[in-house]
Amino acid sequence: MRTTNIIVVLLVIALVSFCGYQQDESVNDDNRNEEISLEESMVHHVEAIGGSESEWRYPYSPLYYGIPGFIYDLADKDTVDEWRAQFASYENPNGRDRLENNVVNAVREIGISKEDFIKRNAGYPFTEEEIEAIFSGSQSMVNKVFVNRGAVLVDDEIYSLDWILAHTLEECRNEGITDDMLKQLHMRIENAPISTQVKMLKEKMDKAGIK
Image (tube, rainbow, N blue to C red; front, side):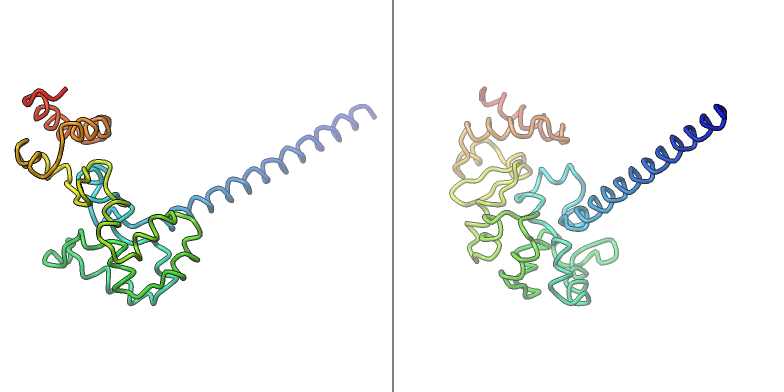
């Protein structure tokens, strides 16, 4: 009888463990589904500007480039695909400038209303301020809100890291880029995956005695 009881207890333990395992698998599946949903809602910016290094070297933040995946829920798929296909790529090397593949141009040229955009965005990935800029029709507002961390904003004009490195310090100063702005820029990018550009900026500053 005692042997029988032990067998029953072992069977119960095994059953509980199996159920727990199944529950964990279900939770993991839910997590994976959530990750997929988040990934699908992210902006398709990689094809617009390149990899992570390029993200620091362009005038605007990565969120500005490309379009959010939910645009497909707000417009005909063929219309969106046709709009995206016009930009330069390996298949279309003579296409439209890739930097014009951005969310501001997308909503205007595809014909997305602000109300529909807000409803589908639901607070992510764009903030209220970013949405206001997207639909403002004001380039200065767009520049202010979407300026890249690796760029400098002077009187509503954006100067990218590549622009700064391609010009002399005197030319930078003529555009209103102060020594303090360069120091702040270096602090923002010193740990970014663009070591060559960081080194070039530091050398430009050191040569001018900017500490």
